[in-house]
Image (spheres, rainbow, N blue to C red):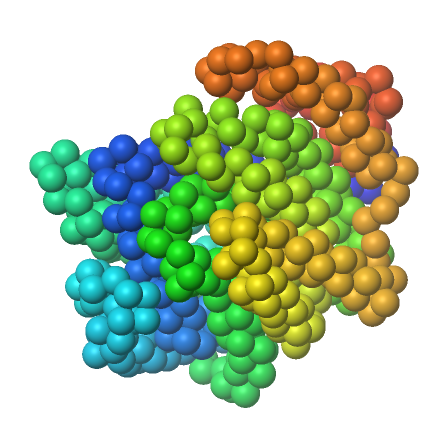
Length: 506
């Protein structure tokens, strides 16, 4: 193989960087939730989840989806050598979201009491008043993230998002919880962590992107920015609401402790997003810059789908089989009630992220922002209606069924749409081998859960059995391709040597 796709190398190199960052972020994320569940009651934790869900929902209105235009337009301007216009996009978006987010923050602060009455939680008013300052902060935070995506320098995003923010948040929260601050400690950790991350992230971006930022500023026509961003803004509203509608529905029908228990289960199940979140930030710009070459787009899509499926599938099997044990050990036994939530969401997220992801990154990169909005509206509608119907009857499992159904539905829609519009699909013989290897892995893992009575033994032994069986099956079925070697070479030269496939022709 003499003609290698440099985009695959970029996807692997930058994806490996973000993967390390996501692992660190995930570890701190799980650690801080473990901390919270041990120092505050499920009702206090559930109240905090509700308050931050309102903040994350409102901040979507604050930024109007404009940050998403940065990693779509900036790569195109940079590819053409139009650095002044690339800078103009960043400056225009930043100035706009600062104004709009400040307005939304003020409106939220004034209406905080109404939210407290809606969820029958008087303390919600104080929480929202204190957290409202994070809305403009989150707007700038999102601008910085997409700016890093646009120049494909994700290692600096890792510093801001995956190192500084979780470390500072964990330290501040832990210190305040130890001295008994409770809900105020959770809020202070959230605010301080975000502030420090933005400060350091801004300094690093200015220093590392100085060549771009020092160019003469050229304002770009706002029309294309708005035309592209507006559907995605509406998409983001629906998508964020979809991601938090479960908490809103549970908070309306049930008590705040049910919200806390469900949140822990949802967090564990959505841990499967780590691989997709590692590759997606660089995948969208790669698709955007080559969207006219359908053959190249399909090749990159197939490689990404195989890698996401290959790494995510055994994790999904482990979480689905051992959900009860992981919840009991990582958190406390009372959270084992969310075991069905974990199993349902693990399967749904696996399907969805393999075929384009919940945010439609493939469709976004191809420029189909209106279709992404329609898909996300479908996602929200299905989730909301099913959750509203089932939560009063079966509790938190009803919310999980709503989310899982919606994720399966939109994953299927994405598959149909990219095939109908451009004839693209991920299904190959090599992809089938990846999926088929999950069958013997599941069969091997089931006895571990059934026969071992200790949760600690299940937590320790299940990943070894499942992942070991899965890896052996991939080797026996000769599932590795030359593109896998190219990807592996960027992750680790040692890993490349271990893959059972012939070397590239040089």
